[in-house]
Image 1 (tube, rainbow, N blue to C red):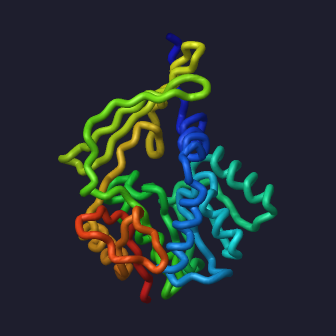
Image 2: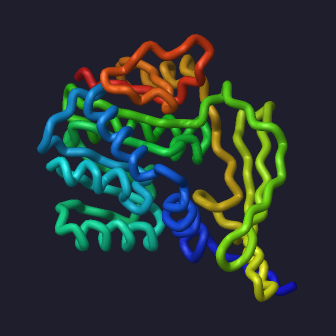
Length: 262
């Protein structure tokens, strides 16, 4: 079998954030629900200025833009930024998309809200995650909100191996939870029908061999406080009704909202 290594931008970013994501039943309706939910809990109205970090292919950004919000999207993968730009061009929407590492943002009081969605918080580990929150605070206007969706430390996954059919082959996956580090781990490989196997190339930062730091709500509250953000509330991504209903006791809470007060 021929084995080919592909980097995050060469293959995996588009595969996971566009190709695989768009196969999920009802995903575009979910995008509308999460945007409506963010609007409500963050008290947003157009044309508020929104910073979308790890914006992927711009699916949620597109929903915001349709409503009249001003959007800046940042993602480290050029392939995803190109896709987002193409989506906006197709619908004649206004938005600014930038290739970059969200740890390097250097805005000062420019945004009404910053969002990090789909579990994209936690890639860097405790120190850099904390620094990112400090940068987000600087980017927000006074009274600006931050909305973060993360992987909860309370949502452990069993060690599993899976496979599924694709149009052009098969996807092999493995996921597990590192209890000592409180890290969600996962890796994938693609076997094409011609016998070629695509595996992740070893690279720092974003990659298909995932190691994502998982947090509890108390940990997120502490990190917010250290960054100068005031914690507002927590929610569950499984309950996105507007207005929000009381989350059932024991439900996994994997969304936090905070505010820059001064």
